[in-house]
Image (cartoon, rainbow, N blue to C red; front, side, top):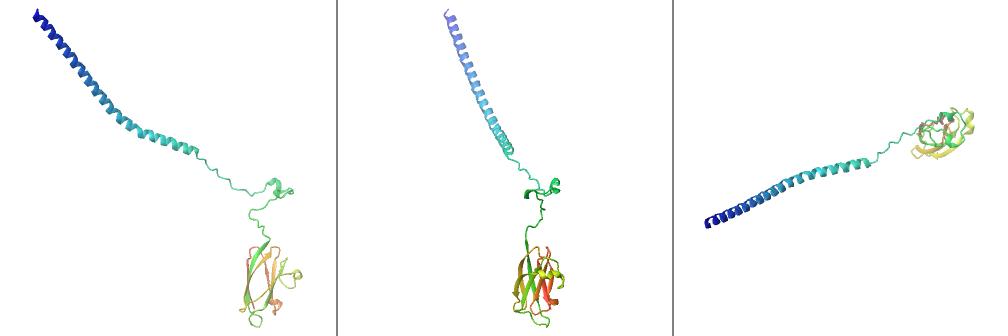
Length: 205
């Protein structure tokens, strides 16, 4: 009887120890699984961060591109007249057609470069020179338009018998007459003015 009691007690102790050992094993396994799970999660988080940043930058760039206004190209201005207004009388200045290259200036600048000698071969130093202008194209002193000549300027040759002067001449004048005191009319200069002429150079003799 005593032997049976001791055997039962020993068996109970063994079962108890076996139960504690099993629980410790499961606890150890649980700890290992948890540690393994933490190790696997960290790289996953580090890998996803650059992708998220790249996506954010791409979206920001797209929004900036969409917000940038596109500059509109202005069409070239047209100076062509309205065909319906060409045959009608202008009522205001806005109805007038003016070409793009129209020159509104009422005068032109002409430079005179004069020199030479008189009929005797002497220098023109200090001699008086007069510049006239006429509204018509004049080719000789016999032309009746000579009677309407207008004096534009009076000057003298320098000591070397040269003179350079600049005149602003109204565009309605067509001819210049340049005369030198003491010289015959045949030695005077008649020169036609045109819109392209900017210099009149001449050597008297």
